[in-house]
Length: 398
Image 1 (cartoon, one colour):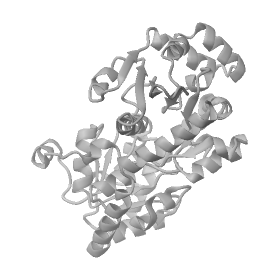
Image 2 (cartoon, helix red, strand yellow):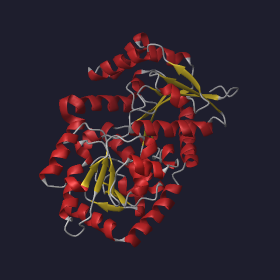
Image 3 (spheres, one colour):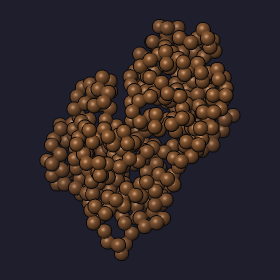
Image 4 (tube, helix red, strand yellow):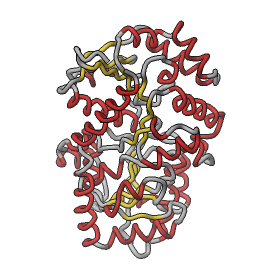
C-alpha cells in the first residue's frame, strides 16, 4: 500500500438493519473501526438501503450510498440462487453489477464484508469476508438451513467465500476448523474474531418505564430467540413442565417475532397446559432487551447452533446468570461463567433450570464469573484483533 496516505478501509453494508445478530456484529465492526481510524486508517462505508443513514450518523466515517445498489444486491443474490460458478459470477459482476464497480471507484485498499454477502466473493476487490457458521453442514436436519434447496445455496455461498475471499473472519477456533474441514481452506487465510457484547447492551434502561410497558412474572427464566426449530424452545418448555411440581412458581419469558415456528410453539404450550407459566413478549427492541436480562432469574439458551452465540455475552454484561448448550465453541466461549447441558436432554435442561431457580449462591457466583469473563471481551481488545487481521491481510496484498 501507498504509505504516504492513510490506509483506506471499506465496509460494505448490503443488508437491512433489521437483520438481528448480523446487525449486532456489523455494529461491533463499525465501533472497532471508530477506534482504528484514529490511528492510520481512513474508513469508507458503502451501503445500499437508506435505513443505514440514521445508524451511520453516530460515526465519523466517510459514507457512500451505492446508486442502484438494491438492484446490485438482487443481481448478486440471483447468481447465488442459480449457483452460478464463482469465477463466472465474478466476471458478470465486474461488468454488470453497480455495486462492484462503485466499490472499485472508491479505491479502498481492502473491503470488509461483515454480513456473509455474496458480493464478497463476486467482487474483485481485496476482501475480508465472514463465515459466521456452517450449520447447514453440521446440523442439516433443521429445515431453516436445509429445506427448499437452502443447504445447496448456503454451501454455494460459503464455498465461494472460502475460495475467493482474501481472508475469512470466523467467530472461534471451532469455526476456523469447520471452514478448513469443509472447504479445504488454508489456516493462514482464516482469522478468529470472537464476538463481543453489542454496544446497546451497555446502555442504561429506565426500569420504572420498562415495568409499566411489560407485564412480566416477578421471577422468570429468560430466552431471547426467534422461533426457529434449532432454537429448541420445545425442550425448554418440556423441562419447565417436568419440574413444575418442585418449582410451582417456575416461569419462562420468550422474546421474538410471531413468525417461524411461533404458532407451533404456542400450540405445544397449550397442549401441555403451560399457558400460565410462559410469557410471549413478542419482538423487543435493542433498547428494551436490557430490561429483560436485568429482571430475569437466569438466561437459558438450549440452541443446537453455534459455534458461538451473542446472548450469553449480553447476559454476562447485565448480571444475569447463564446456562447454555455444551455444543461446538460454546463451552470455550463461556468458560466457567455458565452452566452447560446437552440440548437434546430434557433431564439435563430441567436440572440446570432447577439449580438456577433455587440456588441463590450459585447465581451470585455465576454473575461474578460472568462479569470477569466479559470484561476481556471489550471494544479495545476487539479493535486490536481486527487491526492485526487488517495488517496481516494488508501485508499479503501489497
